[in-house]
Image: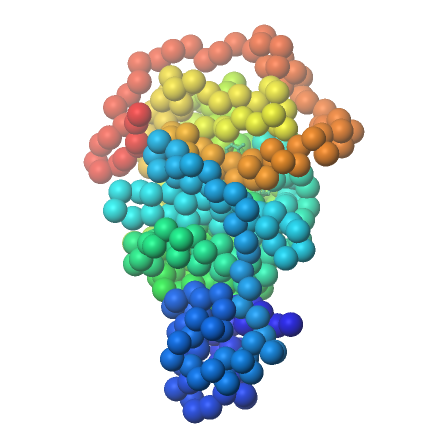
Length: 388
Ligand code: SAH
Ligand code: SF4
């Protein structure tokens, strides 16, 4: 049975137009769906019963079902675990931010990209989410927490690689734009070049965040295997050409791994790599998990400060995601991970990558830690770096 939330606004209008009249009735139904986010035809109280019944015979409005919600973290963020119709589980995160809030959505039930620092990557490929499943995460949480759409931002930073589910992503975005402006929506990618180019060609584009995560090609390939296909320098060229609306920037995400990519020298390298790209850096201290390699550690606050200061000295705008709740959001997939860890833990032993000698030394604790330098002030000329 077709889920009407899987249709683009235009396809929905055509589909409904063929069976429902008069035209204003089509408009009413569209509003119940795309503005109110209802999950049953019965909720459409101004639509005649016979019409609702006829629709329910042919179509569904089903949404993912919440199976678990965490208590709010100290910063108010909450994680939702959803079950899909086929039993797959996905996560979304709600994050209050002052008088606004952000909802972090999953785009796939797993991820084939396989970044070695990511729980979703660890569990491997899953299927693409349908538009109904992506929209459902938003509508279910929005309704449950009664948050007006005007104060909501949406980020596709949950499980999966949104640009590897491009067609469904575009339908989802078109429906979302009904309530949420494109500039309030951010799609985060590991750097899938053809996907970025396809995004660039859209008439209405969301914000783009790119997970760069390492300051050189070799290290990036080490922790993000897919980047052998989409190398760093080529990626940066594509970003330099990416069309940006006035007042918008790209976001460069950078997961900080202690002793691996978090030195001031790494920061200076990163600044060189992204030179000429209108972007701010979002530094995300690594969020550890039992399923991830044990050499991977979150840097201490001093090391994070030194990294941030070095970026600021290179004239790069940077924010740090310090709070625990935000870190949890960054590492979406970990809630599901807990319930699935045992069954798949054995698989990991056979696929664990060979660590470089530097990584091995790190694991053994024999790599020199960067020496402590005086932290520079990180607020100047309106350039902002959040500190504890
Ligand atoms: N696949 C997309 C979007 C989902 S991942 C992407 O990779 O961009 C969203 C962000 O979480 C990415 O920037 C990723 O680098 C980061 N991330 C993944 N695992 C993490 C972890 N264990 N700790 C901190 N950040 C993590
Ligand atoms: Fe996939 Fe993003 Fe995780 Fe990499 S970081 S495995 S691209 S979800």
